Length: 479
Image 1 (cartoon, rainbow, N blue to C red):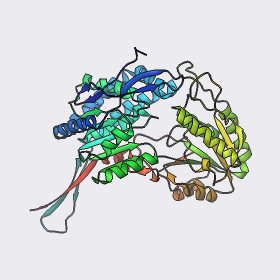
Image 2: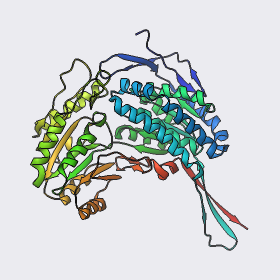
Image 3: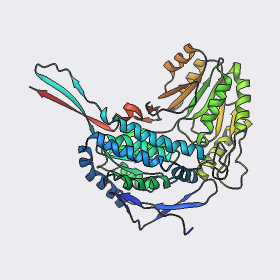
Image 4: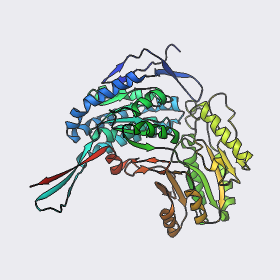
């Protein structure tokens, strides 16, 4: 216990000694204490915001290509430390080591990708109605961005908030999840190595009630970029409303997978399983339920049940060959178990799993398939965030789409069919920010990851995600 690292908040280019309360970070696979991190108060948050605000004008005055060079240097440092960061992520989040390495590499790629936009940030010249007048549209930084991170992909989300913010001339204050802050503090140590100017990037750790609230309600924050639950997103919007602060929110998902009667069943099973067990089902955009056509329901249910039952899971540090680790904490384990019990009480039948896993330690839940489900069940409408797949049988694409569009979320969806016309029909009618056809749910850096309805406001990635971190300034110049 005495040998565990004690991290400090990173403000204005240095680690600041914290004298108040600390939070213990636990390993969800075995319950070991990994570190102690600050539980910051409002004063420390204000110090970080002040540092970012003071640094922003000089940072914005630098050419974008110069700002981008820092991102490239950080990306290179990350690649030199892949194993180090992957181990930290696995220890504090429970992600299998192979996926943690993917996350680390993807983070470096993301920094390089966003840095590549430095020479492509464009304004416009707009035709005027007046003789001798030119209309110019400039894209300028917003100022100071608050990045509030989730625990499920904690390392990648640093880059998703930081990279577009910095390359467009903003500075940032990051609040890591108190469940998984270690990787962020380890990452912050790289910034001194590349000489990032003081105040451009700051980290303040603590609870949402204290740190998140202080960031969201600050008049000196110009945008809040948050990834997490609908409930927390709503609280952030309320706090931001006082100052009319821009919000960018990626919230929950209840992604439906539609398996039609002409689908390649083996492909659908493989892709849906991959989507469902990745990160133990703790992914906003992964397939959360299936609407399967009655003509292929028996075959699909048999094969997906066998596939889920064969999933290798356990402690990712003890066995590098497993496919799935634990849930992130006891609360999440209890929530998943409770939702499954409720579904069974409402008439669902267990095809496989449906129990807390019999392991020596850790928050493990059996990969689960539930059948005989219907649209009124809680498990068919609320986000599970665990390795549980409920299935409902439908008679047509139209029925599946009607059910999918009746959900309160609208982040991602997927369709399995060999018919181009059926695929195009689904694309036309599905009210979702993303639809995957005949593949697992996983977005691309150059796309635009954004949801509809209660899944969020704004989005991330690609050109459109980059421009979320800018404001327009239109100039009317009369000659």
